[in-house]
Length: 208
Image (tube, rainbow, N blue to C red):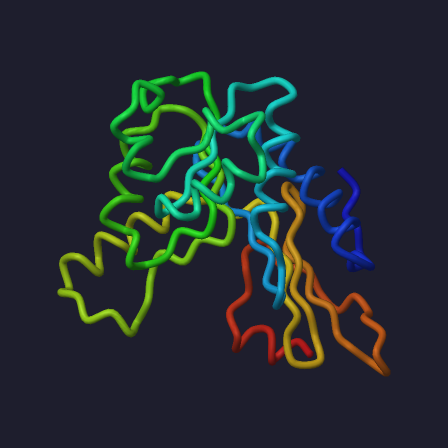
């Protein structure tokens, strides 16, 4: 696949790039993937449903949220798939958890959801996509054993789509391509460098 050395001009183009990453990921031997949009004011349920529609063309797909309020809202907005929408806990307790041929999408899991999200992830036997997950939080005062458990859990996930504006820069990843760093100049973004793995803040600064 040819690398796309330009940033998407809007959300719709970004969603198309995301689809370009999702389709080949279905052939990947990994079973856990993250998708990350780092912008203010995004409607993540819309993005989640877009992921659902991409995957539901050829798969049995479920959507999961942390709490019942989010589930009720999604079921109201998308009544045609209301039986496919669960909380992390209710999905774990359902018969769907052992369906190896199904696909699971989780919306915005947070560090405080770990006790319900991790068991669901560990027990689910199909392919799992997580939208804007935040598995770790330095502000949570937890013991070293639990913190190590969380770090090990994070390592089981592979990013397939990522886009984030930075200070006079931007970082993007579209699986199976490399990570791309762009530099802003006069309100325009220009490709700067690509990386095999996600660059840390220090590496980004060194290359701008």
